[in-house]
Image 1 (spheres, rainbow, N blue to C red):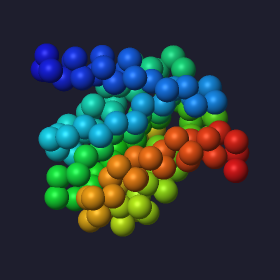
Image 2: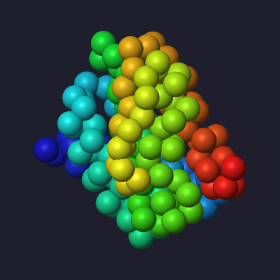
Image 3: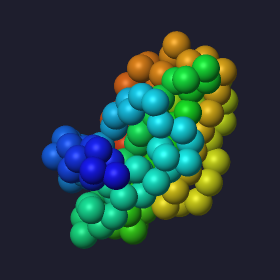
Image 4: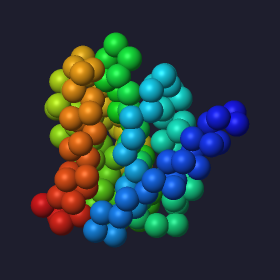
Length: 130
């Protein structure tokens, strides 16, 4: 559990500001889908006071992405499923979930870096209301 707490601290420290949205995007190897989901929620909860979104994923046989968004991010148009839409296409799957928590999976594990690379531009598009 100590490792997990350190990982949460590290992710919170790696926030990028994207047009006023605090965004964390990271490949986190060797976590199962449930652990990725828990990690995304915990990082999001640490950023709860601001518009923030967290996307974590990995490729262990297949690509998995989990996104979590704060209420302030959702209020600005950045929902978790919308944030994952482009990335899901890249990995050959679809995204689904609630506004505050969503996941995507697909068979194209090798495309995970490219999928993660779509997130920042997708956030900008959503913030612009496009």
